[in-house]
Image (cartoon, rainbow, N blue to C red; front, side, top):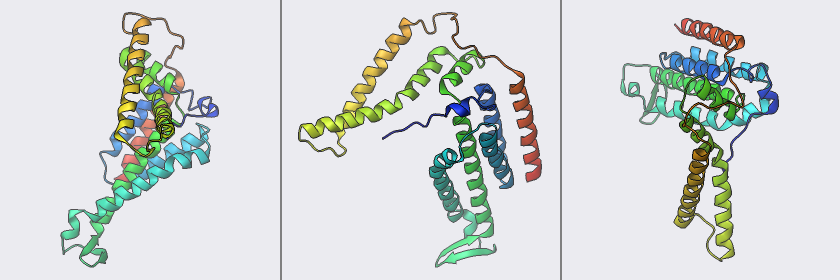
Length: 253
């Protein structure tokens, strides 16, 4: 089954949840860009911890929900760091200090440091992304992108519809498997199930395109049901986030 974790109402009503989604997106993108410029593990640890703390304190995200969302990404982060350290070219340099060895496999100190730094960066990006997702409503995000970031309506609302259609693919998959079971066919994975999913997805996309054209998306100025405006908390968040990023980079040096 394909599941999309939606933010809770308490998180959307929190101080962080009321911030403009575009402001939060700009801040997360700025922090991620800053992390790409450093190989020190301290700035990612600092920014990731601040992002998670802000999600819990300011975003009212339950620690249990945060842990469930982080669990699979934590495994991926450790895997990336381990293999980056294992396959680092520095392991072939006999002049470097060896941290661990097993037969012909050597782990040198620079390789381990590079693996740890990469794992910290990947983990920080995952933590910031989860904190953003668990405190942001997708519909409000698209409204803010259209009104504040001037993203084309056809692209923005089409992407929102595609995102909301992901759980329906899981429902279609279950329905196709049940239909094959009723006919006495195998219910394991089969290419015909993929073809059926493709046909249903195309039909839904066609109906969605007709519905968007009927509502005049992209035909001219439109009135807004939900109006997104810049506010003082948005500026405070961006200013404080810039200061935190600068402090983290200086601390890393």
